Image 1 (cartoon, rainbow over the protein chains, first blue to last red):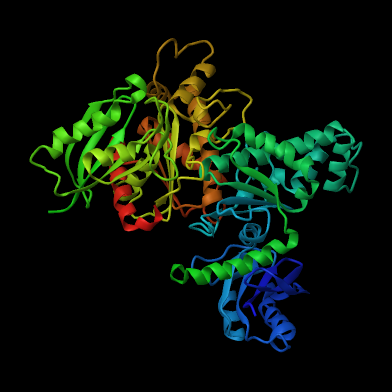
Image 2 (image 1 turned 90 degrees about the vertical axis):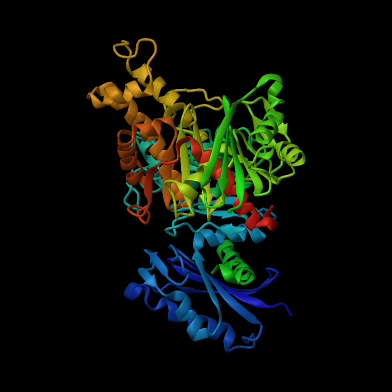
Length: 317
Length: 317
C-alpha cells in the first residue's frame, strides 16, 4: 500500500484535512471550524485532536502515514519552524511545526497557503508538468506563489510571491490592509473590483447597496459599459503586474485561481490580451495563462507535495 | 600560483579582456575594438586572436589558465551554447561557446552581460556577502540581473531579469526598442530621462539642442523645478518597478549601476524613498539599495565567477 501523508489547509473560518498517498490520491477528507479565540492559541491542539480522532486512533492507523504538510495564511520563518504572523488567526511567531511534531511524532512541513496552492496546481492541477510558474489567487485579496525549478521561492524575508502588494500607479489612493497605498490587491481582488464598480457607477444605477462580483460579470455579459470598464481596469492592473513579473523571472505559466477566476474567459481573455501586449518579445507566444483547476483543494495537495519534496532534499532545510 | 581564468565582456564598441585568478585578482587587462561588419561574424576569431597574442603565445602561457567566462549583450540559449540574439553585434544563434572551446581548448561559459555584472557585484562589488539580489543598470537602456541563492535566474526563455521591459502605466506612449510600448527603459534609462526633460522643458529654456544627463543633475542641484520633476519621474517609475520586484522575489539587496548611477545620492535617495514606500512591511527596513562599485569591470568579474561556480556544480549544466 502506498505511503500516505496528511495535508492541512488552515483558513480563517475552517481547517481542511485530507489523507493523501504519494501518488496524490485522496482517501479521506474532513474539516473543522477555525477557533480564533485567545489569539488562535487553541488551533494547534484542535488540529492534533482532529488528526487523532479521525485517523491515528482509528483503523487508518499511523503505520502508513509518513508526514504532514500544513498550509498557513501567513509567512513562515526561514528555518521553517514558525508561523511569523497570521493576522486572520491571531498568530505571531507560532511554533506550529514543533508543537505538532512533538504531539503526533510525525515530521511536519509548514508553508504559506498561496505557496501551497501554487505547488498543488503544479503537482495535480493547471500547471502539471511545469517547474516554473506564477500562481495568483484573486479572492478577498490577491495572493501569490512563485515556483522556480519546482521549488517555492520563499524569499529573504518570507515575502516571496506577495504579488498582491506590487504597487500600482494610479490617480486614486486606495489604502491596503498591509498599510501601503495602491497595492495591486486594492484594484484586482474581488474587493477591488467591487470598489471600482461602485466608483464608476456614481449614480448607483446598478450597484445600490449589496452586489457581488458575479453581478458585475453578469452586467458585463449584458453589455453594460460600466461593468466592462470596471473589469477592464481590474485586468489592466493585474496584467501589467503579471507582465512585469514575466519579464523579471520569465516562467512557463501563469495560473489564476480564487473567486474571481470563476468568471472564466470573461476575466482571462482580456487579461491575456494585456499580458501579451507587455511581455518581452522572446516570451510572447511561449507561455500559458490558465485557470486554476483544484479550487479549494490546491492548498492540501501542495502542502503534501511540499512534504514529499522536502524529504527528497533533506539537506536543504 | 593561483589558477587563472580569462574574463571577457563583449560590448557594442569594444571587447574587454582580463586575466583573473580564482581569488579575483586581476593580473592583466586589455581590450580590442568590436568589429560588427558581416553581422559580427569576425568577432569570435578576433577574440581567439586577442587571447592567443596577449596570453597563450606569450610568457603567461596556458598552463595556469583553467577556463573562460564571457559576458554577451544578449540572451543565451538554455543549453548555454548559443548567443540567441545580440542586436548590437548582429548576432543570431551564434555558437560562441563551441567555437572558442574548439580553438583554444579551454572550457567556456557564456552569460548575458547584465547577469554577468550582477554576479560581479555579488562576488567583488556592492553586494559582497549577499546571495539574493537585483542588479539594475541604467545606461542607454535599462538592463537587469536577478541572483537567487547565488545563481543567475536565466529564465525559461532566457529573458530572466529583463527589468527594463517591465511595463509602466502612463498617459504617454513611448515606443521601446523591443517593440513594446511604455517599457520601464523608455522612462528610467539615460535616454528616458533626456526625453522626459525635453518634454517638460516645452519652451526649451534649458535643453535647446544637445544636453546630457549630467546637465539634468546639475540643473537639479541648482534647484531647477523642471529638472527635479524629470528626475522624480525617472525614479518614480523605477522605484515602483523595483518595489514590485522586491514584493515578488524578496531579495536582500538592490544594486544600481550604469551611467545614471553616477549621479549618486541625487538619484539614489529619492529612489529609496519611492521603493521604501511600496515594499511589503516585512521587507521595509531589512534590505539595501546600493550604488554598484565595479563600474565597467563588473561584467569581467562576473563572467569569471560564473565559470568558477559552473565548475562547482557541473551536473547542473
